[in-house]
Amino acid sequence: MDKLRIVGGQRLQGAVTISGAKNAALPQIAASLLSAHPLELTNLPAVTDVDNMLAVVERHGAEVTRSAHGARIDTGAAVSKETSYDTVRRMRATMLVLAPLLARFGEARVSLPGGCAIGARPVDMHVKALATLGADIDIENGLIVASAPKGMNGARIVLGSPSVGATETAMMAATAARGETEILNAAREPEVADLAACLNAMGAHVEGAGTHRILIEGDRGWRPATHDIIPDRIEAGTYAVAAAITGGQLELTHARLEHLASVVQLLEAAGVSVWPGDRGLVVARDGPLRTVDITTEPYPGFPTDLQAQFMALMCCAEGASLLRETVFENRFMHVPELMRLGANITLQGTTALVRGGEPLKGAQVMATDLRASVCLVLAALVCDGETTINRIYHLDRGYEQLDRKLHLCGAEIERISA
Ligand code: EPZ
Image (spheres, rainbow, N blue to C red):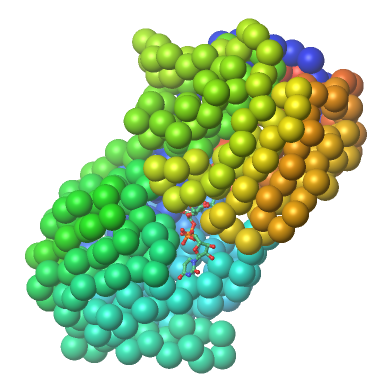
């Protein structure tokens, strides 16, 4: 397995091109199954999660034509068949094909995703949303078996909590249901709004995405469509921390300030400067880091997908900071590895107390999940000496050419192929 070798101590300077958002691309690839007309996606990030989701729709009979950062998906010959446990086990987001397959073919069989490194991650809200639209859902031998032979009917769906995936499942199913659907307590993430924009380009009628109340006028017919995917706010936030932690200055090309308001607010409280540049956001730090307390929340709150990265940053700020994780029940897998680098962190349930300011020292560490892995890369950029990060396939799932992008900004980083 490939590994990364990083020697700390370089201040990062330069520009980083932010790629398309993985978490916008995945539901949109799934949504292509709703329609028999082709869907062209541009600004796709070159990450393995996207490769895997395209392979999933291919296994359902779609014809996929790839370009560097794009894909044309023709699902004219798509079929409904079981989406296996092996497929879903490797990527939870595969769950997102359930609603499109059910809407298109009147039936779908998708394996339950099971847990993953960051928690149990049930799918009860996905299932409940489909049942509210009139689908019959059974769980048999680890499979979700959904059927709606007479189609689905628009309804009012009230989500128990603003789940991103459940909102996307409800939205996609509702576009094919007869009549109007109202989704209340919907997730407001930009990736949900981007999925709605993609569905509308395909012929759907979705209003209010990005707010807690989404209205869908269903069953309007489909047409060929092209959609350009929004930039990845989590990748942008990650490189913002890279600039902050090394005391450098980076311009994050294509990054959108409006998607990062809560992140920018915390960066500025920590002593980091952020301002609009010619091509995106500029992030710089030349004074001391200050400690800040962080609580992760659904959008527009501080994103759970940046919690690990900010923990690495707080390890370098003199004093104590509290990081509270409210979205997932086990998203501190990076803590033991950070402690191997000399970080002083105490865990109590869903809260981590970081006592920062001591210098970190390079060591061998292990990547565990996507965001925990990149947290270790950020810490390694400021460690004394050399750090080796193993199992970096986790990084390749969601970060396009991370080592190359960092190297171009002055990091001493090398990918070692096994
Ligand atoms: C999406 O996951 C993202 N993934 C995650 O990014 C992100 O961390 C998460 O939203 C929160 O923002 C994609 O978009 C592909 P949720 P999702 O449904 O949809 C519970 C990354 O690193 N829940 O909003 O799975 C669930 O267990 C990934 O890029 C239920 O209880 O997240 C979790 O505790 C990691 N029942 C909470 O809600 C359900 O039916 C939030 O989950 C669904 C979810």
